[in-house]
Length: 109
Length: 131
Image (cartoon, rainbow over all chains, first blue to last red):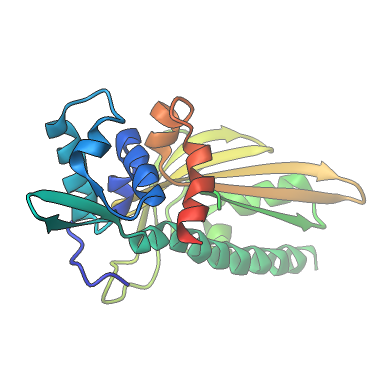
């Protein structure tokens, strides 16, 4: 898991299409500077940078300084949370729907 | 991976009885949780689980669709997480009824920009990222 403190909900971070596009681009590279990311969008550097900081707050992006530039990297582990709710509710409903079966049988007696 | 949960169960019962199990507050308490549910569109209700140190145990819902005896839908909110729960009942052979559950999250994303921005495709890619 990430040791970075998560300041923002991961669901919130991925709710925006630009940020999902950023995750896609970051998933394809090891390490990428802001100006290379910016060329992929119809928006300015500041706007892209703002989206990156939201991803950073959710622990999805890590950055490091290389000389004068900052390079960005994806940290996919918080995305597990998105998978977790599915497995939680899968167990929750499966157990409940089995008891519903028993309940319906009881009623028929 | 998909951002929705789908389950199908078959019960040997009548569609009316199954509908009642899904909509009657007393019956819901027996197989889901204590609640103040009413099958009335717009009705706001709670399911109450046992609280623990991480969670107050409350699920907030609002009834969205009541179309007896085949379709029921409500919202399902736990903290910041908001889902929609859809139930579809369908009579099948041998006096059985199929109950289909579909629970989706990100309801706003789906509604407003899901189609436009290929949310579904993105889920496939999410699998690759997590692989």
